Amino acid sequence: MPQEETQVLIAGGAVVGLSAALFLAWHGVPAMLVERKPSTLRHPRARMINPRTVEVYRSLGMERSILAARSLSADLSTKTMIRAKTLDDHEAQSSPMRTEAPGLTAATPCTWCSIDQNRLEEIVADHAAKFGADVRYSTELVAFEQDGQGVTATLRDADTGEERRVRARYLIAADGIRSSIRGRLGIGVTGPGVLQNIVSLVFKADLSGPLRGRDLGLGYFDRPRSGTRMMPLDGSRWVFITPYDPATTSADDLDDEWCTEAVRAAVGVPDLRVDDIEVQIERTGAKVLGYEIGAQLADRYRSGRVFLAGDAAHAMPPTGALGAATGVQDAHNLAWKLAAVLSGKAGPGLLDTYEQERHPVARHTIDYAMNTMRERISAEGDGKAVSYPAIILGYRYRSAAVLPEDGDADGPPALEPELLGAPGTRAPHLPLIRDGARISALDLFGAGPVLLTDAEGGEAWRRAAGPAGVEVRVIGGGELTDPEGRWRQAYGVGPGGAVLVRPDGFVAWRTPALPADPAAELRQVLARILDLA
Image 1 (tube, rainbow, N blue to C red):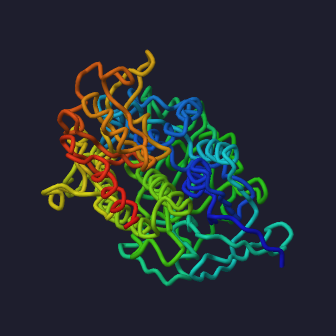
Image 2: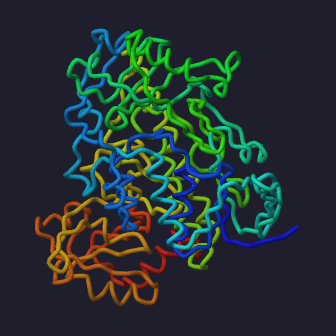
Protein backbone atom coordinates (compact mmCIF):
# COMPACT_ATOMS: atom_id res chain seq x y z
CA MET A 1 0.00 0.00 0.00
CA PRO A 2 1.47 3.43 -0.92
CA GLN A 3 2.58 5.54 2.03
CA GLU A 4 3.03 9.28 2.42
CA GLU A 5 4.27 11.46 5.26
CA THR A 6 3.15 14.73 6.81
CA GLN A 7 3.60 16.45 10.13
CA VAL A 8 -0.09 16.83 11.00
CA LEU A 9 -3.04 14.95 9.52
CA ILE A 10 -6.49 16.55 9.86
CA ALA A 11 -9.70 14.56 9.44
CA GLY A 12 -12.70 16.70 8.52
CA GLY A 13 -12.97 19.45 5.94
CA ALA A 14 -15.56 21.83 7.36
CA VAL A 15 -14.59 25.21 8.75
CA VAL A 16 -12.74 23.90 11.83
CA GLY A 17 -10.61 21.37 9.97
CA LEU A 18 -9.88 23.85 7.20
CA SER A 19 -8.91 26.48 9.77
CA ALA A 20 -6.57 24.03 11.48
CA ALA A 21 -4.87 23.35 8.13
CA LEU A 22 -4.70 27.09 7.47
CA PHE A 23 -3.15 28.01 10.83
CA LEU A 24 -0.64 25.16 10.73
CA ALA A 25 0.45 25.96 7.19
CA TRP A 26 0.80 29.64 8.10
CA HIS A 27 3.14 28.60 10.93
CA GLY A 28 5.15 26.58 8.41
CA VAL A 29 3.91 23.14 9.50
CA PRO A 30 3.22 20.63 6.69
CA ALA A 31 -0.41 19.58 7.12
CA MET A 32 -2.70 17.27 5.16
CA LEU A 33 -6.48 17.55 5.42
CA VAL A 34 -8.83 14.79 4.25
CA GLU A 35 -12.57 15.15 3.74
CA ARG A 36 -14.85 12.40 2.40
CA LYS A 37 -17.20 14.87 0.67
CA PRO A 38 -16.20 15.96 -2.87
CA SER A 39 -16.03 19.66 -1.96
CA THR A 40 -17.23 22.19 0.55
CA LEU A 41 -21.01 22.07 0.97
CA ARG A 42 -23.09 24.71 -0.83
CA HIS A 43 -25.48 25.05 2.11
CA PRO A 44 -24.84 28.24 4.17
CA ARG A 45 -25.24 26.55 7.62
CA ALA A 46 -23.64 28.96 10.14
CA ARG A 47 -24.39 32.51 8.99
CA MET A 48 -22.34 34.71 11.32
CA ILE A 49 -18.82 34.91 12.74
CA ASN A 50 -18.13 37.10 15.74
CA PRO A 51 -15.42 39.77 16.07
CA ARG A 52 -12.99 37.47 17.89
CA THR A 53 -13.13 34.98 15.01
CA VAL A 54 -12.56 37.83 12.55
CA GLU A 55 -9.55 38.88 14.67
CA VAL A 56 -8.08 35.40 14.29
CA TYR A 57 -8.35 35.51 10.50
CA ARG A 58 -7.18 39.14 10.46
CA SER A 59 -3.88 38.04 12.02
CA LEU A 60 -3.25 36.06 8.81
CA GLY A 61 -4.18 38.95 6.53
CA MET A 62 -7.60 37.54 5.57
CA GLU A 63 -9.99 40.11 7.03
CA ARG A 64 -10.63 41.98 3.78
CA SER A 65 -11.33 38.79 1.82
CA ILE A 66 -13.84 37.63 4.41
CA LEU A 67 -15.63 40.97 4.72
CA ALA A 68 -15.83 41.22 0.93
CA ALA A 69 -17.77 37.94 0.87
CA ARG A 70 -20.44 39.07 3.32
CA SER A 71 -24.00 38.05 2.61
CA LEU A 72 -26.35 40.56 1.02
CA SER A 73 -28.33 40.25 4.25
CA ALA A 74 -25.31 41.27 6.32
CA ASP A 75 -26.58 44.46 7.92
CA LEU A 76 -28.28 43.50 11.18
CA SER A 77 -28.94 47.07 12.32
CA THR A 78 -32.45 47.16 10.83
CA LYS A 79 -33.38 43.49 11.01
CA THR A 80 -35.86 41.88 13.36
CA MET A 81 -36.02 38.50 15.07
CA ILE A 82 -39.55 37.19 15.64
CA ARG A 83 -41.50 34.30 17.14
CA ALA A 84 -44.90 33.49 15.59
CA LYS A 85 -47.16 30.66 14.49
CA THR A 86 -46.29 31.42 10.86
CA LEU A 87 -44.59 34.27 9.03
CA ASP A 88 -47.99 35.58 7.92
CA ASP A 89 -49.29 35.71 11.51
CA HIS A 90 -48.70 38.50 13.97
CA GLU A 91 -45.66 37.79 16.06
CA ALA A 92 -45.84 36.62 19.67
CA GLN A 93 -42.42 38.16 20.26
CA SER A 94 -40.23 40.57 18.33
CA SER A 95 -36.80 42.05 19.03
CA PRO A 96 -34.24 44.01 17.00
CA MET A 97 -31.32 41.87 15.87
CA ARG A 98 -28.85 44.64 16.59
CA THR A 99 -29.06 43.48 20.22
CA GLU A 100 -27.80 40.08 19.04
CA ALA A 101 -24.59 41.66 17.72
CA PRO A 102 -23.64 44.34 20.25
CA GLY A 103 -21.23 47.05 19.20
CA LEU A 104 -17.72 46.32 20.47
CA THR A 105 -15.71 49.05 18.79
CA ALA A 106 -13.95 50.01 22.01
CA ALA A 107 -12.78 46.45 22.57
CA THR A 108 -11.83 45.22 19.09
CA PRO A 109 -10.77 46.55 15.68
CA CYS A 110 -13.02 43.94 14.06
CA THR A 111 -16.73 43.78 13.42
CA TRP A 112 -19.34 41.08 13.14
CA CYS A 113 -19.41 39.41 9.75
CA SER A 114 -22.53 37.83 8.30
CA ILE A 115 -21.00 35.31 5.95
CA ASP A 116 -22.42 31.98 4.84
CA GLN A 117 -20.33 29.09 6.08
CA ASN A 118 -19.86 27.69 2.59
CA ARG A 119 -18.33 30.98 1.43
CA LEU A 120 -16.11 31.14 4.51
CA GLU A 121 -14.94 27.58 3.93
CA GLU A 122 -14.06 28.37 0.32
CA ILE A 123 -11.96 31.35 1.42
CA VAL A 124 -10.23 29.42 4.20
CA ALA A 125 -9.52 26.46 1.91
CA ASP A 126 -8.05 28.79 -0.74
CA HIS A 127 -5.74 30.51 1.75
CA ALA A 128 -4.74 27.20 3.36
CA ALA A 129 -3.64 25.92 -0.05
CA LYS A 130 -1.75 29.15 -0.76
CA PHE A 131 0.18 28.73 2.49
CA GLY A 132 1.04 25.16 1.53
CA ALA A 133 -1.59 22.92 3.15
CA ASP A 134 -2.49 19.73 1.28
CA VAL A 135 -6.32 19.69 1.15
CA ARG A 136 -7.86 16.49 -0.26
CA TYR A 137 -11.58 16.05 -0.86
CA SER A 138 -13.25 12.71 -1.70
CA THR A 139 -10.81 11.14 0.76
CA GLU A 140 -11.88 9.36 3.92
CA LEU A 141 -9.85 8.32 6.96
CA VAL A 142 -10.95 4.71 7.54
CA ALA A 143 -8.44 3.50 10.15
CA PHE A 144 -5.55 4.71 12.27
CA GLU A 145 -3.15 3.54 14.92
CA GLN A 146 -0.67 5.46 16.99
CA ASP A 147 2.62 4.80 18.72
CA GLY A 148 5.11 6.87 20.65
CA GLN A 149 6.41 8.63 17.55
CA GLY A 150 3.31 9.30 15.49
CA VAL A 151 0.09 8.16 13.86
CA THR A 152 -0.35 5.84 10.88
CA ALA A 153 -3.66 6.34 9.09
CA THR A 154 -5.34 4.50 6.24
CA LEU A 155 -7.08 6.74 3.71
CA ARG A 156 -9.59 5.67 1.06
CA ASP A 157 -10.32 7.48 -2.20
CA ALA A 158 -14.12 7.89 -2.32
CA ASP A 159 -14.14 7.73 -6.13
CA THR A 160 -11.82 4.81 -6.83
CA GLY A 161 -11.76 2.91 -3.54
CA GLU A 162 -7.95 2.96 -3.60
CA GLU A 163 -6.35 2.95 -0.16
CA ARG A 164 -3.06 4.44 0.97
CA ARG A 165 -1.30 5.06 4.24
CA VAL A 166 -0.17 8.35 5.71
CA ARG A 167 2.34 8.69 8.51
CA ALA A 168 1.96 11.84 10.64
CA ARG A 169 3.40 13.10 13.88
CA TYR A 170 -0.06 14.15 15.11
CA LEU A 171 -3.72 13.75 14.11
CA ILE A 172 -6.49 16.33 14.58
CA ALA A 173 -10.04 14.95 14.64
CA ALA A 174 -12.39 17.61 13.27
CA ASP A 175 -14.90 15.04 12.06
CA GLY A 176 -18.06 16.35 13.66
CA ILE A 177 -20.54 15.66 16.41
CA ARG A 178 -20.55 11.90 15.75
CA SER A 179 -16.76 11.76 15.47
CA SER A 180 -15.69 8.24 14.54
CA ILE A 181 -12.17 9.05 15.69
CA ARG A 182 -13.43 10.04 19.14
CA GLY A 183 -15.38 6.79 19.25
CA ARG A 184 -12.36 4.68 18.30
CA LEU A 185 -10.35 6.37 21.04
CA GLY A 186 -13.02 5.49 23.60
CA ILE A 187 -13.49 9.11 24.67
CA GLY A 188 -16.93 9.64 26.19
CA VAL A 189 -19.11 12.74 26.17
CA THR A 190 -21.26 14.42 28.80
CA GLY A 191 -24.32 16.58 28.35
CA PRO A 192 -27.86 16.17 27.05
CA GLY A 193 -26.64 14.94 23.66
CA VAL A 194 -28.94 15.29 20.65
CA LEU A 195 -31.52 18.01 21.27
CA GLN A 196 -33.14 18.00 17.88
CA ASN A 197 -32.86 16.47 14.44
CA ILE A 198 -33.43 19.00 11.69
CA VAL A 199 -33.62 19.16 7.94
CA SER A 200 -32.49 22.26 6.10
CA LEU A 201 -32.90 23.53 2.57
CA VAL A 202 -32.56 26.69 0.50
CA PHE A 203 -35.55 27.92 -1.50
CA LYS A 204 -36.52 30.91 -3.61
CA ALA A 205 -39.84 32.72 -3.22
CA ASP A 206 -41.35 36.19 -3.06
CA LEU A 207 -42.29 36.67 0.61
CA SER A 208 -43.00 40.40 0.42
CA GLY A 209 -46.68 39.85 1.18
CA PRO A 210 -46.40 37.91 4.45
CA LEU A 211 -43.38 39.98 5.50
CA ARG A 212 -45.60 43.09 5.54
CA GLY A 213 -42.60 45.41 5.33
CA ARG A 214 -40.67 43.75 8.13
CA ASP A 215 -36.92 43.33 7.56
CA LEU A 216 -36.71 39.81 8.94
CA GLY A 217 -33.35 38.52 10.06
CA LEU A 218 -34.49 35.35 11.80
CA GLY A 219 -37.91 33.85 12.43
CA TYR A 220 -38.98 31.07 14.81
CA PHE A 221 -42.28 29.44 13.78
CA ASP A 222 -44.67 26.76 15.04
CA ARG A 223 -45.58 25.44 11.57
CA PRO A 224 -45.05 22.89 10.20
CA ARG A 225 -43.48 21.96 13.55
CA SER A 226 -42.46 23.90 16.61
CA GLY A 227 -38.84 24.95 16.26
CA THR A 228 -39.05 25.76 12.55
CA ARG A 229 -36.76 28.62 11.51
CA MET A 230 -36.33 30.79 8.43
CA MET A 231 -33.75 33.42 7.59
CA PRO A 232 -32.91 35.44 4.47
CA LEU A 233 -29.98 34.34 2.36
CA ASP A 234 -29.90 37.01 -0.32
CA GLY A 235 -32.51 38.60 -2.53
CA SER A 236 -35.45 36.20 -2.72
CA ARG A 237 -33.46 33.19 -1.45
CA TRP A 238 -34.22 31.85 2.01
CA VAL A 239 -32.90 29.21 4.38
CA PHE A 240 -35.57 26.92 5.86
CA ILE A 241 -34.99 24.63 8.87
CA THR A 242 -37.50 22.35 10.55
CA PRO A 243 -37.31 19.44 13.01
CA TYR A 244 -37.93 15.89 11.82
CA ASP A 245 -37.86 12.37 13.23
CA PRO A 246 -35.11 10.27 11.61
CA ALA A 247 -36.72 7.12 13.06
CA THR A 248 -39.68 7.53 10.71
CA THR A 249 -38.33 9.78 7.96
CA SER A 250 -35.14 9.86 5.93
CA ALA A 251 -33.90 13.28 4.84
CA ASP A 252 -32.87 11.67 1.55
CA ASP A 253 -36.52 10.81 0.81
CA LEU A 254 -37.90 14.35 1.15
CA ASP A 255 -38.78 15.49 -2.36
CA ASP A 256 -39.62 18.89 -3.83
CA GLU A 257 -43.30 18.44 -3.06
CA TRP A 258 -42.62 17.84 0.63
CA CYS A 259 -40.26 20.84 0.73
CA THR A 260 -42.78 23.13 -0.94
CA GLU A 261 -45.58 22.16 1.44
CA ALA A 262 -43.31 22.56 4.47
CA VAL A 263 -42.26 26.05 3.36
CA ARG A 264 -45.87 27.03 2.67
CA ALA A 265 -46.86 25.89 6.16
CA ALA A 266 -44.13 27.98 7.79
CA VAL A 267 -44.96 31.05 5.70
CA GLY A 268 -48.70 30.60 6.26
CA VAL A 269 -49.64 30.96 2.58
CA PRO A 270 -51.11 27.66 1.25
CA ASP A 271 -50.66 28.55 -2.43
CA LEU A 272 -47.24 30.25 -2.12
CA ARG A 273 -45.16 29.94 -5.28
CA VAL A 274 -41.85 28.28 -4.39
CA ASP A 275 -39.64 28.66 -7.45
CA ASP A 276 -36.59 26.63 -6.61
CA ILE A 277 -35.29 24.11 -4.07
CA GLU A 278 -31.54 24.31 -4.52
CA VAL A 279 -29.11 21.40 -4.86
CA GLN A 280 -26.65 21.30 -1.94
CA ILE A 281 -24.43 18.36 -2.94
CA GLU A 282 -23.83 18.24 -6.67
CA ARG A 283 -22.49 14.69 -6.77
CA THR A 284 -25.65 13.22 -5.24
CA GLY A 285 -28.15 15.91 -6.21
CA ALA A 286 -29.20 16.22 -2.56
CA LYS A 287 -31.39 19.24 -1.87
CA VAL A 288 -32.31 18.50 1.74
CA LEU A 289 -29.63 18.08 4.40
CA GLY A 290 -30.23 16.35 7.72
CA TYR A 291 -28.40 17.53 10.84
CA GLU A 292 -28.30 16.94 14.56
CA ILE A 293 -28.42 19.85 16.97
CA GLY A 294 -26.86 18.76 20.21
CA ALA A 295 -25.14 19.82 23.38
CA GLN A 296 -22.29 17.69 24.59
CA LEU A 297 -18.69 17.96 25.71
CA ALA A 298 -15.97 15.38 25.20
CA ASP A 299 -14.50 14.10 28.44
CA ARG A 300 -11.01 14.60 27.04
CA TYR A 301 -9.57 16.58 24.15
CA ARG A 302 -6.48 14.44 23.71
CA SER A 303 -5.49 10.81 23.53
CA GLY A 304 -1.78 10.39 22.90
CA ARG A 305 -1.02 12.05 19.59
CA VAL A 306 -4.65 12.61 18.62
CA PHE A 307 -6.52 15.85 19.41
CA LEU A 308 -10.23 16.63 19.14
CA ALA A 309 -11.43 19.98 17.80
CA GLY A 310 -14.73 21.59 16.86
CA ASP A 311 -17.91 19.51 17.09
CA ALA A 312 -15.85 16.39 17.75
CA ALA A 313 -14.84 18.03 21.03
CA HIS A 314 -17.98 20.02 21.81
CA ALA A 315 -21.40 20.56 20.34
CA MET A 316 -23.82 23.36 21.17
CA PRO A 317 -27.04 24.84 19.80
CA PRO A 318 -26.58 27.44 17.04
CA THR A 319 -28.11 30.20 19.16
CA GLY A 320 -25.58 32.98 19.60
CA ALA A 321 -23.43 31.90 16.64
CA LEU A 322 -20.93 30.33 19.04
CA GLY A 323 -20.38 26.80 17.73
CA ALA A 324 -18.22 27.38 14.66
CA ALA A 325 -16.41 30.25 16.39
CA THR A 326 -15.48 28.06 19.34
CA GLY A 327 -14.15 25.42 16.96
CA VAL A 328 -12.08 27.89 14.94
CA GLN A 329 -10.54 29.16 18.16
CA ASP A 330 -9.76 25.55 19.17
CA ALA A 331 -7.75 25.24 15.97
CA HIS A 332 -6.04 28.58 16.55
CA ASN A 333 -5.03 27.60 20.09
CA LEU A 334 -3.70 24.19 19.04
CA ALA A 335 -1.87 25.22 15.87
CA TRP A 336 0.78 27.46 17.42
CA LYS A 337 1.46 24.88 20.12
CA LEU A 338 1.95 22.08 17.59
CA ALA A 339 4.19 24.38 15.56
CA ALA A 340 6.31 25.23 18.61
CA VAL A 341 6.72 21.59 19.63
CA LEU A 342 7.43 20.32 16.11
CA SER A 343 10.07 23.01 15.59
CA GLY A 344 11.78 22.23 18.90
CA LYS A 345 10.95 25.64 20.39
CA ALA A 346 8.76 24.06 23.07
CA GLY A 347 8.59 20.82 24.98
CA PRO A 348 5.81 18.28 24.53
CA GLY A 349 4.12 19.37 27.76
CA LEU A 350 2.90 22.50 25.98
CA LEU A 351 0.40 20.33 24.10
CA ASP A 352 -1.29 19.37 27.38
CA THR A 353 -2.38 22.97 27.78
CA TYR A 354 -4.72 22.68 24.77
CA GLU A 355 -7.24 20.71 26.80
CA GLN A 356 -6.51 22.68 29.98
CA GLU A 357 -7.48 25.88 28.20
CA ARG A 358 -10.15 24.98 25.67
CA HIS A 359 -12.20 22.43 27.64
CA PRO A 360 -13.44 24.96 30.27
CA VAL A 361 -14.16 27.51 27.53
CA ALA A 362 -16.38 25.00 25.73
CA ARG A 363 -18.18 24.09 28.94
CA HIS A 364 -19.32 27.59 29.81
CA THR A 365 -19.99 28.46 26.14
CA ILE A 366 -22.32 25.45 25.86
CA ASP A 367 -24.15 26.60 29.00
CA TYR A 368 -24.56 30.08 27.52
CA ALA A 369 -25.83 28.77 24.16
CA MET A 370 -28.29 26.41 25.86
CA ASN A 371 -29.73 29.21 27.95
CA THR A 372 -30.04 31.47 24.91
CA MET A 373 -31.89 28.72 23.05
CA ARG A 374 -34.40 28.36 25.89
CA GLU A 375 -34.96 32.12 25.90
CA ARG A 376 -35.62 32.25 22.16
CA ILE A 377 -37.86 29.22 21.88
CA SER A 378 -39.87 29.51 25.08
CA ALA A 379 -38.83 32.82 26.65
CA GLU A 380 -37.79 30.84 29.74
CA GLY A 381 -34.06 31.37 30.14
CA ASP A 382 -32.30 30.99 33.47
CA GLY A 383 -30.41 34.27 33.34
CA LYS A 384 -26.75 34.55 32.43
CA ALA A 385 -23.73 34.79 34.72
CA VAL A 386 -21.71 36.75 32.13
CA SER A 387 -22.55 38.95 29.16
CA TYR A 388 -22.40 38.06 25.47
CA PRO A 389 -19.33 40.30 24.90
CA ALA A 390 -17.59 38.47 27.75
CA ILE A 391 -18.36 35.10 26.17
CA ILE A 392 -17.00 36.29 22.83
CA LEU A 393 -13.89 38.22 23.90
CA GLY A 394 -13.37 37.66 27.60
CA TYR A 395 -12.88 33.93 28.13
CA ARG A 396 -9.90 33.16 30.36
CA TYR A 397 -7.20 30.51 30.18
CA ARG A 398 -5.73 28.84 33.23
CA SER A 399 -2.95 26.41 32.33
CA ALA A 400 0.76 25.73 32.51
CA ALA A 401 1.17 28.06 29.49
CA VAL A 402 0.05 31.02 31.59
CA LEU A 403 1.89 32.37 34.65
CA PRO A 404 -0.86 33.48 37.02
CA GLU A 405 -0.92 36.46 39.33
CA ASP A 406 -2.32 36.52 42.85
CA GLY A 407 -6.06 35.96 42.83
CA ASP A 408 -6.22 34.60 39.28
CA ALA A 409 -7.57 31.25 40.47
CA ASP A 410 -10.79 32.94 41.53
CA GLY A 411 -13.39 34.78 39.52
CA PRO A 412 -15.67 34.02 36.58
CA PRO A 413 -14.61 32.01 33.51
CA ALA A 414 -15.00 35.12 31.34
CA LEU A 415 -14.47 38.84 31.93
CA GLU A 416 -15.98 41.94 30.39
CA PRO A 417 -13.74 43.20 27.55
CA GLU A 418 -12.69 46.34 29.41
CA LEU A 419 -11.18 44.18 32.19
CA LEU A 420 -8.74 42.24 30.00
CA GLY A 421 -4.96 42.41 30.20
CA ALA A 422 -4.10 39.96 32.97
CA PRO A 423 -2.30 36.67 32.20
CA GLY A 424 -4.73 34.20 30.66
CA THR A 425 -6.87 36.84 28.95
CA ARG A 426 -6.85 38.04 25.36
CA ALA A 427 -4.45 40.95 24.94
CA PRO A 428 -6.49 44.17 24.90
CA HIS A 429 -7.15 46.08 21.71
CA LEU A 430 -5.27 49.38 21.78
CA PRO A 431 -5.19 51.90 18.91
CA LEU A 432 -1.57 52.55 17.86
CA ILE A 433 0.22 54.46 15.11
CA ARG A 434 2.93 52.67 13.12
CA ASP A 435 4.67 54.38 10.20
CA GLY A 436 1.86 56.93 10.09
CA ALA A 437 -0.87 54.27 9.83
CA ARG A 438 -3.42 53.46 12.48
CA ILE A 439 -3.28 49.83 13.68
CA SER A 440 -4.40 47.80 16.66
CA ALA A 441 -2.11 46.29 19.25
CA LEU A 442 -3.63 42.98 18.15
CA ASP A 443 -1.88 43.40 14.79
CA LEU A 444 1.46 42.89 16.56
CA PHE A 445 0.73 39.25 17.44
CA GLY A 446 0.58 36.00 15.53
CA ALA A 447 3.87 34.50 14.35
CA GLY A 448 5.68 34.04 17.67
CA PRO A 449 5.79 35.35 21.22
CA VAL A 450 5.92 39.15 21.48
CA LEU A 451 7.12 41.22 24.43
CA LEU A 452 5.43 44.61 24.77
CA THR A 453 7.15 47.34 26.75
CA ASP A 454 7.72 51.10 26.71
CA ALA A 455 10.66 53.36 25.94
CA GLU A 456 11.90 53.21 29.54
CA GLY A 457 12.37 49.47 29.35
CA GLY A 458 12.90 49.02 25.63
CA GLU A 459 16.66 48.72 25.44
CA ALA A 460 16.95 46.44 28.47
CA TRP A 461 14.19 44.15 27.24
CA ARG A 462 15.69 43.98 23.73
CA ARG A 463 19.00 42.80 25.19
CA ALA A 464 17.16 40.25 27.33
CA ALA A 465 14.88 38.96 24.58
CA GLY A 466 17.37 38.69 21.73
CA PRO A 467 18.99 35.40 22.79
CA ALA A 468 15.56 33.95 23.53
CA GLY A 469 14.23 34.71 20.05
CA VAL A 470 11.39 36.84 21.38
CA GLU A 471 10.33 39.89 19.39
CA VAL A 472 10.17 43.12 21.40
CA ARG A 473 7.77 45.90 20.49
CA VAL A 474 8.26 49.28 22.15
CA ILE A 475 5.20 51.46 22.60
CA GLY A 476 6.27 55.08 22.60
CA GLY A 477 9.72 56.28 21.67
CA GLY A 478 9.28 56.27 17.91
CA GLU A 479 8.41 52.76 16.79
CA LEU A 480 4.80 52.71 17.95
CA THR A 481 2.81 55.72 19.07
CA ASP A 482 0.05 55.41 21.65
CA PRO A 483 -2.23 58.33 20.63
CA GLU A 484 -4.66 57.81 23.52
CA GLY A 485 -1.95 57.31 26.14
CA ARG A 486 -3.63 54.14 27.44
CA TRP A 487 -0.91 51.50 27.05
CA ARG A 488 0.04 51.17 30.70
CA GLN A 489 -3.52 51.30 31.97
CA ALA A 490 -4.82 48.81 29.40
CA TYR A 491 -2.06 46.28 30.03
CA GLY A 492 -1.62 46.84 33.76
CA VAL A 493 2.06 47.81 33.87
CA GLY A 494 4.17 50.73 35.00
CA PRO A 495 7.33 52.36 33.57
CA GLY A 496 9.69 49.71 32.23
CA GLY A 497 7.14 46.95 32.74
CA ALA A 498 6.48 44.31 30.11
CA VAL A 499 3.81 41.93 28.87
CA LEU A 500 4.56 38.66 27.10
CA VAL A 501 1.87 37.81 24.53
CA ARG A 502 1.57 34.36 22.98
CA PRO A 503 1.14 33.77 19.22
CA ASP A 504 -2.61 33.32 19.75
CA GLY A 505 -2.88 36.84 21.19
CA PHE A 506 -3.29 35.79 24.84
CA VAL A 507 -1.24 37.26 27.66
CA ALA A 508 1.15 34.66 29.09
CA TRP A 509 2.92 36.79 31.71
CA ARG A 510 3.47 40.37 32.76
CA THR A 511 5.70 42.28 35.12
CA PRO A 512 4.66 45.74 36.29
CA ALA A 513 8.24 47.06 36.38
CA LEU A 514 11.67 46.30 34.98
CA PRO A 515 13.20 43.46 37.05
CA ALA A 516 16.79 43.56 38.28
CA ASP A 517 17.84 40.90 35.76
CA PRO A 518 15.43 40.98 32.80
CA ALA A 519 17.29 38.26 30.86
CA ALA A 520 17.18 35.77 33.72
CA GLU A 521 13.55 36.58 34.42
CA LEU A 522 12.53 36.08 30.80
CA ARG A 523 14.46 32.80 30.51
CA GLN A 524 12.63 31.41 33.53
CA VAL A 525 9.26 32.58 32.21
CA LEU A 526 9.76 31.02 28.78
CA ALA A 527 11.04 27.77 30.27
CA ARG A 528 7.86 27.41 32.32
CA ILE A 529 5.41 28.48 29.62
CA LEU A 530 6.99 26.45 26.82
CA ASP A 531 7.89 23.39 28.91
CA LEU A 532 11.61 23.89 28.36
CA ALA A 533 12.73 23.26 31.93
